[in-house]
Image (cartoon, rainbow, N blue to C red; front, top):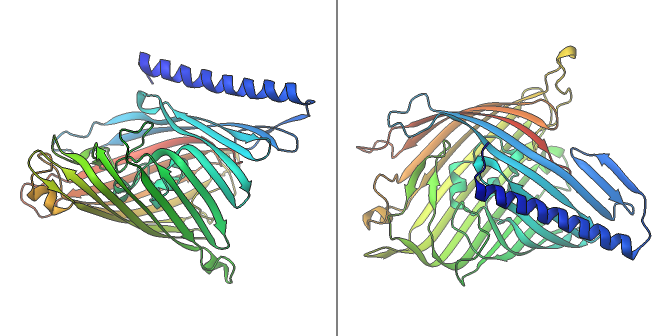
Length: 418
């Protein structure tokens, strides 16, 4: 992987800042108190603890190499390639029992980007305040960790929800209900942001309920429902939407910008029981936009359903599968095998096209059907192979040819848990 001079400088700055903070914190603790015994352990990553885990530092990482191929690409738009999709260093820990932090830069795709950077004030196991950059609590699949994704790329529905943003949020739990709410700078759909481009802010929140979590039988406890939403007033950049092969299929026309109120809502449901794992979600975004000659308030919608089944019998979860017999060819053990399938669809408001606010060649309706197979060699190593067919503006004269994408992934994930 090649990093340009700017990327190398950014990466070096991130690493230097992290080392400086760690050394400063350690020096301050050493000067203020008698050193306590330090314990070093391996918990799917390196963990260093002291004072009975009141102080903790963990080091992990995530590496994902993808191969993307389009066996039938009449327009020549999909580049067959191998790519380092994600290369992340994970630094997290706890300071003086009540303060937790996480810093996660990413060097994938030949660039350096800061993905997570936040501090938690942990008032109790069921309530904390988070300050910094983290995922915006809206879309279900977007909130799933990148290492736990079933398909290498998220579904079409994730195009309509925000990714990461800077802000302040509260996270808590009351009985069978989990809640997250906060104030963020505000980013376009599917985007991440480090700086604010205007005075507008987004209010975002999400509620998750497991209504049968304290009941029998266990099959009922595995079900949950949730809803996330944002509201705010934003101006500036508008989103672009991409397919599984990371090809742009919709963008707003040049000169068209966000200019006013934006609301999002995304209800969802999930079910994980035994070898079965499935989830579904709906996303709806309304954004005031202003073009060169007209204004509009388009509403774009999307939905998806994903299902998985572990053929080797292990339990499915939203964090992946732990094989009962990890990869060991000498013993004829090869890990856990999971089959996956999904369908997703996205529709752009027809008024965008009627008012000339879409770029030439943009698609209004897109649907994708995918299947795949995953091999979990052990708790850290996973291989995934998928095929997905994406149809653009079905049955419309002159529509873009269907996209046939074959994607495979090799992943090493070292994700220690606080």
